[in-house]
Image 1: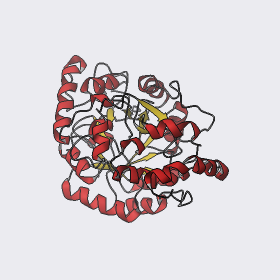
Image 2 (image 1 turned 60 degrees about the vertical axis):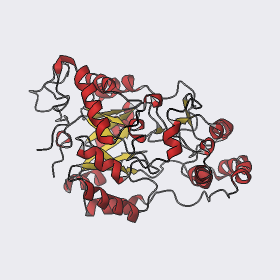
Image 3 (image 1 turned 90 degrees about the vertical axis):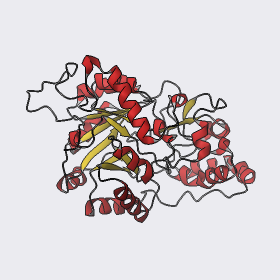
Length: 387
């Protein structure tokens, strides 16, 4: 199994891992078969459940795919008093949905060690990490079994940390991205206003000049023209989540899919209301009423609100669901995954400067790539066709 990023897919298009059900085996398999790189979300599953989903993906495609893991929270433990205050804030929701709040102390590590063991014992082509960076021992262990590693970063400092630890590539996430921000540390002092976080193009340029690893850009990307833009800015591939969320193969709830283009939901914001970690979603009643009071308390808040979110979905009420979405959600196109990949590739081909072939992607020989193709120290970072 090759560990080079340029062996993973024919197109410089990556389907984002979306924890919570959207990135199901059927979506991953369809994306991979279409020539892009599909990712299975390992978050919020048991180790056994993840193993079974990996088996299902392998039954759907022989092409490379990835698995994403959520790193256990680091730093200071969550203040239980803050979580208890939020529990009282949510008391009215218990009566509204006729369901008790969840136990915030269900566990903090998302079965991380057990999932690592499964992926090292029965390797997949790619493993990515969100909410932090594994230590060098873990990354080296994946390298030894032939698995390519990717670490999500939201700053130059995080990018440099991942490079020093031995990551194979970085997923550079701008604040436009839907779902959770992949920050390595959730600082309670950092606000969630419109100025929070770094926009993708600015962050991508900073990271490109700060590290020498291959880069996958993500955050609000919905069209082939945007893929061309991030490739021109120094990325080696573009990762899209919201664009694939509405595909029929996606495991997202039908209410979530319809909300992407529902005129009732006009914009997105970052919130801690549902999980205790900053995440971008469509602004609904729950977010408006509880977002201002939610503490920085992941995963305790996630466990606390899980029964409410499930009850809201069962009741057909999107106003109580976590409707994760990127800033480009209104551009969502309800197409089969393969058709969407083909359309994105066609748009990229039409927009690519100098007539680049997206099947050969953004290689170091492209005229707009600042790296020297003759420098043996430059990373091999192009996503190309699998031999």
